[in-house]
Length: 251
Image (tube, rainbow, N blue to C red; front, side):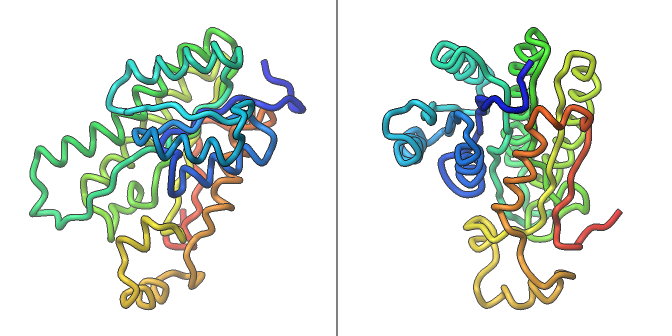
């Protein structure tokens, strides 16, 4: 069991750049120890070195979420280093925007395997560990695309994020009796390099015009939501999806 005033050890997947790096920075700034895990080991090392050159509170580990055994390796290495892990943030994912009728089935299966399969593998490996300890926090990155079918993203991305929402409920139900919570956050378009890569500058005004609040989401705020869901105080929240989509999807 983790006490509310004790820093936790958090593993963030896909944390070397983009929104994952924002999450890693947020957890570290709050006083937690952070593992920056990413398939790009060099980029992960650069961020970890920036956060803590001595490696006492931030370290980098290579993780390909397509390989369940690498989740186990990261878990084992982290426990060997710091004695425990309390938090897993399943952030890593791929996005391939492509018209629906042009998506090759092999590409569809690849995106599903990486995004949904990675969340399943990570939640299973860490779920076993958290269950054995009687405490743990898993937070999954879903998406508005998984709720409304997506607009700027491909059907495979939207389908994978919808699958992540279902996996969140399944793991939450099974792990709830053991002090382990599993939740999701579903952002809409955020002010991140990924969104700017998908939406050219000349099309940004029309995108903003269609957003009820008239602006992109703040990634730092979304990261704070994840930090809150990962806290010991969040014991009564599980199986939930917290929406932060600028009013694009209301329920």
